[in-house]
Image (cartoon, rainbow, N blue to C red; front, side, top):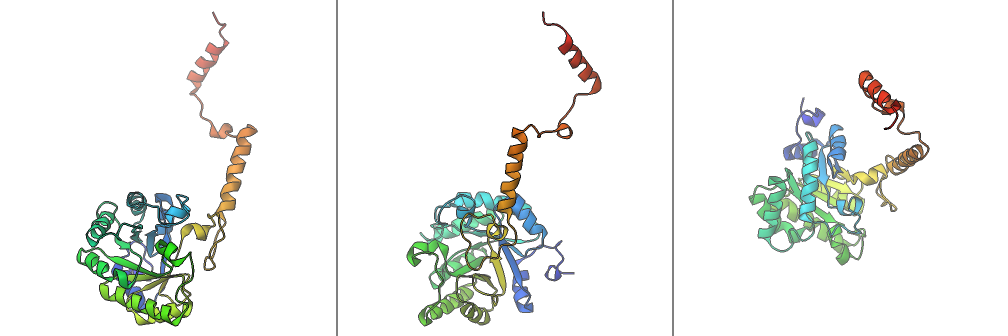
Length: 292
């Protein structure tokens, strides 16, 4: 049985993802940032794990993705890769790691594969990144593209706003997708665009499209794990479906621990270690001796 039909013992590859589009089988992707979360995600049979630069916001507490560094992304990618035995691991290249020069971009991207074990990298941008995608492809570095709402362009866009709402903007997105496909990207993330536009792009390119806030007609879907689990501190975006409320569960567990400690209920007898009988008797006897 192949991985495409659900045998999680086999490793997902880029070929697997591309075959899923041909078979019209939905592709699943989630973010993860550490060993524990990546292992839990991987054990479900998720197709791809993205070590997203969103860790800047959901893990490190920044207001945008811009401050996270290459070294921080490498650190988290290593942890995720140790856990992932099934999913394809993709590392986000952070802001300024591929914007200065193509030489520096290839060098930084190679670090994610060589030092952290990633199997692909993701970069934001369309036509303006096509030449870079070609260089990365020539360096044997698989690339996932990302167009639409690109968080690293938050200041230029004037905030996290839906893209592709005018005919001119739609035409630009269509050209962006075509440019990335032609340059050799193995998949394209479509973020924050109308579902009709995402459907048009998905039908027009031969590579898989992965939607986030782009409607149900993409070849696959990705969400930030913390959004899915309710582990965020701000109002979620419209496209987020919260499958659990771990924020409340964790807060409740921590409060219960604090209360038990303060009232002497933890640790109890079952949670305490004891000396062996003969040693315990000797200690007890020494405590009974009068002090000299």
